[in-house]
Length: 380
Image (cartoon, rainbow, N blue to C red; front, side, top):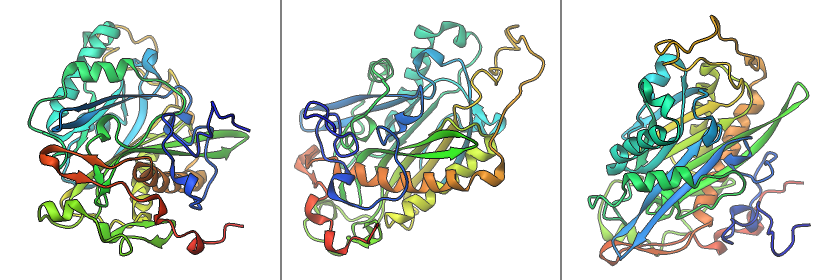
């Protein structure tokens, strides 16, 4: 049994905030050790959280797919946009080659350029040989202008460097941390959330991890484990009172990672399943929401020749070879993405607190008493 010094990571974040499972919400599937994207071996997550004065509520989330020391080993990857009212750099290269190398960063909409520059700067400092050719890093965003002074330039290259250098494996915090610091979801306080599922295939257990930066959905839509909660929680909505905007305005970035060996198109197929996980939380997908999803596989380490290796005369082999899970065996991995996405959104809502932002406007935490235990489906 976990000790008081080591709380159950499925029930609470490292900082002690309750996660969605602590409410007794019946999520399906088998979570990993941390129930986080970091259940994928080697993957590291880091945050820079910027909360200063009353106006600054923002930050940066950094993800190293194979860990910071293996930035030069590309991963197979696939991208899917449910709605394109958002930005993710590096996608053209991913679509061209089905892979990318190095870390990625998630921040606010007006800091994407800074995040991109920070990723390049970090690589030059920590892996200078990788920067001898060209770098096309992944930097992406959601809009935090409701709570944050988004035009103030508060995210800097140093913010990105700090998140990248501070990344670690193991359990990670959720809610108002990193790039999710100033975000809202279903007109509650939203932000960063994560979950994972384990999948057995051919005698090996693989992890499928999901990380969301949740900043989407209208209050009326909110659903958890099939229970429609939005109508029950229609009151006390400072966001709706502050300014009129189309219902569901906002964005969501979802990163899916697995150590199962996959082809690029199989990773894209996982990214498409994110839509089904989000739908379980109630959203119907607003035109005013940028919903961008990236999935990657850390399987086949060392199997992909980096794009600049041939140019720089460092390619030592004539062929790359990939070992992959057959298409006909992917259904359990699809289910894992759907289940982990739903729970990651719930964690972003529950592992949170009320936040006052710029001009004294507020985002309320989704109340812990909102889950109607008597209405929970029987999981026996």
